[in-house]
Image 1 (cartoon, rainbow, N blue to C red):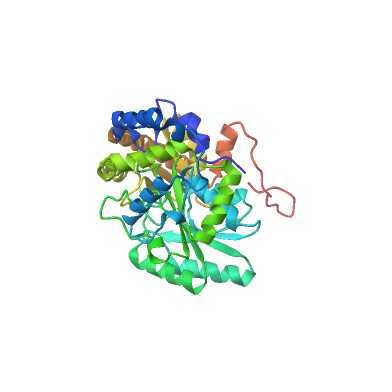
Image 2 (cartoon, rainbow, N blue to C red; image 1 turned 90 degrees about the vertical axis):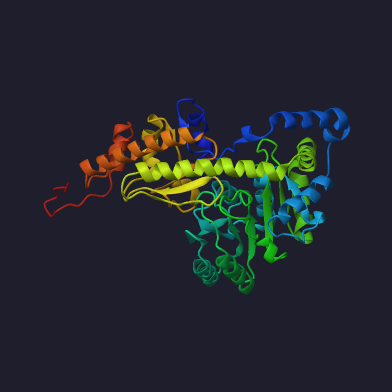
Length: 424
C-alpha cells in the first residue's frame, strides 16, 4: 500500500494562503445547515435507542427503500431494497466488491486515467490494472475490446471493468449514449462484469441524468452510489446495488470488516430524504458547481499558455488538464505550492506510471474569485516552467531540479568514444 497523491496534499492545502484546486470537497455550506442540525438532534433525542445502537449488516431497511427512489432518477426502476447494501461511503463499497471478486494476480480493466481511490483498493488486493483509453466521449469501446482480447491471449483472469461513466473523476468527461450501448454489448459478448461507480450522476449542468449502465442490465452491472456529493461526505453513507447472490457475499464481507454501517448516519440520511426538499437541494448544488465550472473554464481560456489543453465537463467536480509537451506535473508541484496554488498530479491516477503531463483541477470547493486567482497563479507557474525548459533546452531539467533541491543527481550510462573520453 502507498499514500494517495491527494491525501499527501492535505497538510499543504489546509493553509489559508493556498488556493486549493486539488481535493474534491463538496460545498456543504450550501446545505440548510440549521434544518439539518435540528433534524439530527431530533433523531438522537427522539430515537436514540435505535440511532445509537448496532444495526443490520445490510443497512437500515427504510434507507434502502429511499436509495431505490434516488436510483430511479437515472433509470434504475427495477431495483429492490433487498439488493441494496449500505456502506461507509462508496469507497467501502468498492473495497467490498474487490474483496469478494479479486484474487492476487487477477486483472481489472479500468479507464486511463482512473479514480485514485479505486487504484489504491486494487493495489491493496494485489490485482493487476490494465488501463483502457478514453477521449472526450469517455471510454473507447474498441480499446476495451482490444484489452479484453489481449488479456485473454495472455491467459490473464479478467474479473471486471471498473468505470466512472458520468463526469469522470479525474477526467471530467461523460460516456456518450452510443458508447454506453457499445460497452454493454462488449460486456455481453465477452461475459464481462462491470462495476459502475456513479457518485456524480445527478450533478449534470447541461441535461437530465443519463440512463445508468445498471438500468440496461441487472445481472452484469454492480452499481456503486454515494450521498457524499449530493448531501454530506462527513456522514459517510454509500451503497452497492448487486444481484442477490453477490449481495449475500457483500453483507458477509461487511460484517467481517465493520459489523454494520453506522446507525446514526443512516437514520440521518433516511430522515433527510423523507423530510427535506433534497431534489431542490441537488439543483442548488448543480447551479453552484456550474458557476464554478464556468469560472474555471473562462480563466483557463484567458490565462493558460499555448500548448495547454483541458476537458470541458458537463457536470461533476473536475477538469483534466494536459500541460505543454515536456512538462511534468509532479516535478512542477513544489513550484506551484510555493506560488500558493495546489493541484493533483496526473501520475496518481495511473497504475502504470502514466499521466506525467496531466493534472486534475477541482472547482467544487473554492469560490469563483478564488478559482480565478488560483488559475492565474497556476498559469504563471506553467509559464515559468516553460521558460526553464526553453533556457535549458536539451538539458535534463528533472535532474536539474533534483540538484537544486539538494537531492543527488541520477547519472545514467554515458557515451564514450574509443579513447575513453566521456561525451557531455
